[in-house]
Image (cartoon, rainbow, N blue to C red):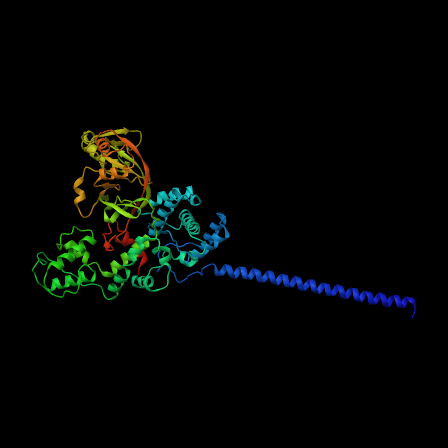
Length: 560
């Protein structure tokens, strides 16, 4: 074999070996790349699957016919909001999931204005941003818009750009609030999405679910909210009464219910009082006796009537409110109480509008109650939170422009001496409506003292010369502010830790006729609420008249 042949064969063998190495290397690289590609594909698929699991599936069973709100968003609008606002991935997933669960139904608006949940949440939002120091939720644009919307009892809402933007901003803030104020994982995503109703429900089915099915109300509300817990304790009783057909109808005519009278109507009355727990035992006799009278008195106390034991036509009307309606009231007010701000450990003032009572608390314990007068229909006292930080003795009354226009100007046209007669003066005539104020004195509409807690509604506590109104059972007569029956008692209590303000000095300032502003050393949180059903400190279930028709409107949205 020639040397050339030998070299060729060796070279050929070397080339084959070298090529084989290249081929093997190529195969290995390809496999690695393929494996890497598969790995990336798997990782991407896993991420997408995880994301799908973190977003609630769209609930298309919610329709315009059964939805809580009658306004709906387009999913494209939600996505555009997420992009425009540069929302983080975590928050974006939550927003998508939130609206999927509602089938893109508005959460905070219906076509007649803000929903109850929007007002409740915004009160909580205000409290958190102003008094708990959560600056991350501050948003000047949203604040300005909500100040305007909250002041309107009736608001013509449409699926316009401005309303949709406010709706989505509220949702973003709501989710952010939940993430900020609860430990990670404490509030489950799907539970959070159920905080705001999405569809009408049968009240019996809703009550049954809250009583018997697994839920987290105990964790989110009952364990931390005494008001919610106290009311829920009565839910089963009223559920059972409603489920079993309710209570009998009580008839009424004058002279029908008197001591010693016996009739079938009295037996029916006893049955009615026994079912609601106002009369103990099972007295089936026909006689109107002391037990019946005691039962009537208890019913009167629980429904805001003077407890005189007399059965009136108005009282019988309350007794004949159907049990299922009372069950709805319990459910609606439980929903309202979900938005109650955490009670401070120190002092707290709570005014429940339908109750016409101010409650002063110290460390969760009742200090005193005070009878109040609230706004009449059309001049509703608004629900909000604030801090009482200023007492004004012998105040001027700066008459609101709406009252100047609707009441004072017409009166001035009829009587040129109207202002002098009522101790009023014109401060400025520069505008279309003159600025008018009433001077301090005995006839001043604010009385001798007022108590300020800054808010966008210009609502405050004050004295009044119209003392007779405090003796009525129903006390909705003001233009929106809250009149106190015992303003001097309030002033003494609020300023008790300021030694220079002795009871004698306070009395002198109230009667001086010269306006005097006093800063409160330790401001007291004020919560203005609207509860038509609640459990009092004795555990008794109370009901009150729906003076502003909030229950009527809410029931139409919540129940079918």
